[in-house]
Length: 108
Image 1 (cartoon, rainbow, N blue to C red):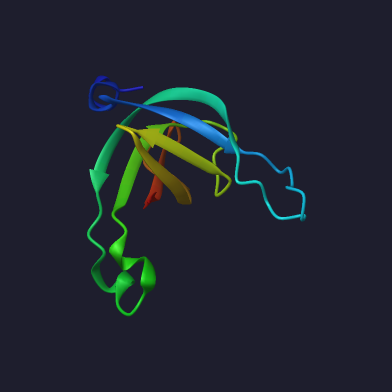
Image 2: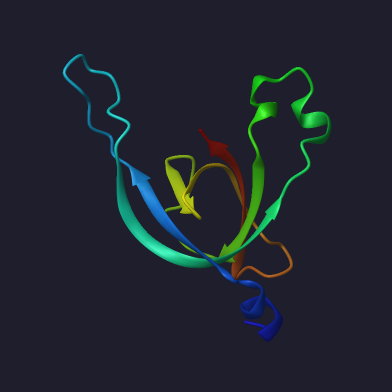
């Protein structure tokens, strides 16, 4: 792994996995459990044309770059600086398979 990539990972996040359990009326409980922590790089995303006439446009979006790790997907949320970030997409970096890029929506 290059020294430049390791030096760019300056933010610490907690990784949480959504539990699949149900509440008393069979709805999703919405509970999460700790699944580790990681050093990441965080950058804001410009909504661009992606958010035109879309309700999610009001939510801040973030690009997270991190070392490749199994078990990260739409069932994952990250906790960064007391903010909850829902993972919307995961892409492996084609230039460096040891890193992955996440697009996250901030939850309110």
